Every structure is written in C-alpha cells, then in structure tokens.
Length: 128
Image (cartoon, rainbow, N blue to C red; front, side, top):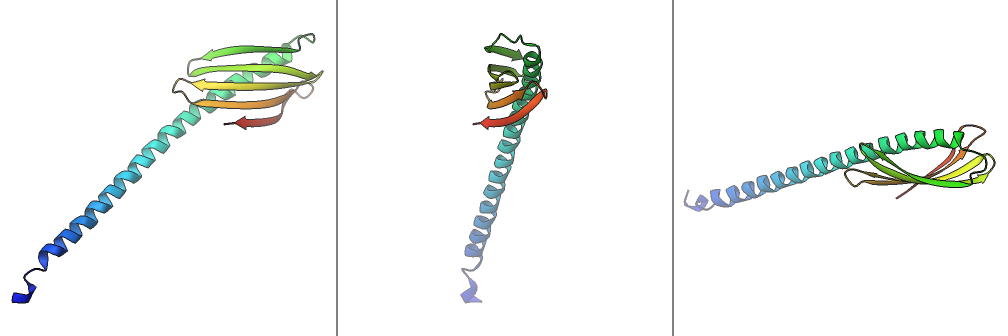
C-alpha cells in the first residue's frame, strides 16, 4: 500500500486536462456553427435581394426603347440596395452588371446576359 501513495493526483490531473480539452473543443465547434449560421443567413438575404432586383431589371429591359444603348440605376429595397448597369450588345441581347449590398454589409455581385427574344437570362456569372 505504501507504493500507491502518489497515484490519484496525476490521474485526476490527466482526467481534468482531458475533460477541459474536450470542453474547449466543443465550445469551438459551437462557435463555428453559430458563425456559419450567421453567414448562411447573410447569404440568404443577399440571394433574395439579388433575385428581387433581377426580376425588376428583366421587366425594365423588356420595356426599354430600342434607341437606348445603356442605362444604370440604384434600387433600394428593405433588406439592402442594388446598383446595376445595363449595356445593349445587339438588338436582342443586354449585358447587365449587378452589385447588391445588404443591410448587414454582405456584398453580392453578378453579371448576366439577357435575351429579349427569349425573355430570359442566357448566361449568369457571379463575382466575389
């Protein structure tokens, strides 16, 4: 029995260190999950803003006069603002560059080609 005297303290310290390490690891995982959820929400708001703005732009492009070669505008929505520039490439095609900024400062830029004959987007590029 006299040789077992110093066994409990080192074992307790090791178990405490292991538990503390696991606790810190779980806290880091939780913080990562929270940050990911916040970024996902910002991305979702940016995507909604972009979709709303693109629908408005498509309506304007269909109704624009044939003499207009380019125009730009800033659209303000409740969840942010977007500015865009539209340039006519030929009689039936517009090139549009859109930049959205949400109220939480998330920026989302895209560029697309819009076909007047088809009435839809024929090419889409996102810029980061």
